[in-house]
Image (cartoon, rainbow, N blue to C red; front, side, top):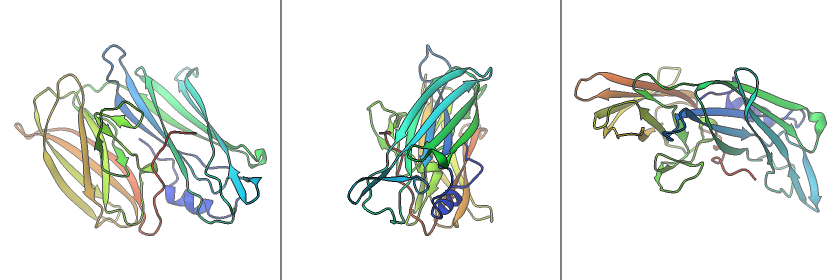
Length: 291
């Protein structure tokens, strides 16, 4: 997964200022192996977050105002042709007063299956009620390839612990209901970082020890070992966990997860992901089904 080269806190801080300027778009991509044994390749989960502060609010009725934004998502193949495309119209909740300082960001999630290969994810957002505000385009490279040995999928940050669930939806994976933390952001009064990943290409029945390492740029860190897991046959092994944020200061942090074979003591795979913590601002709501 990737951040835009602009932190969430800076985007939100900027959006609390003047309303002028183009709308903002934050994208993250998580890559997993496709569970379909016939259709080889991967699945990518596209997490989209739109701060609503810069959007134009139009009066719909007395003391009733609403904004609207259009998000175009396109996945391009290496040759420039389109592999997938979808347009989503976002309409934040109606407000009675546009001077209200808190206009919550909106988030949604899309899951797309793709053959192995090199792609570009392009996101474009425009203000539906004020074309003069311009538009913002973000592009992220996406490489989907089958691992040649044991490997984790991308780490996904969650707003709350994963919950066991059997239903099939864009919010379910590996037998769990997952509520993504918008752009990997954890706000005030959040005591733990929650996460999900999958361990691939490890022979079934292998006992694996998981180690978690949480670190901030100033050297502050926290470590924990999870109970051993036993790898499954014919499918990735789901890994869910949490780690206290206690010593981690406000700002960026990195979570690293390590899988070690208990019998041989050999490190099988590692994976890292970056997030951000605030001690003063509340976190945005988790991703929802776009309206």
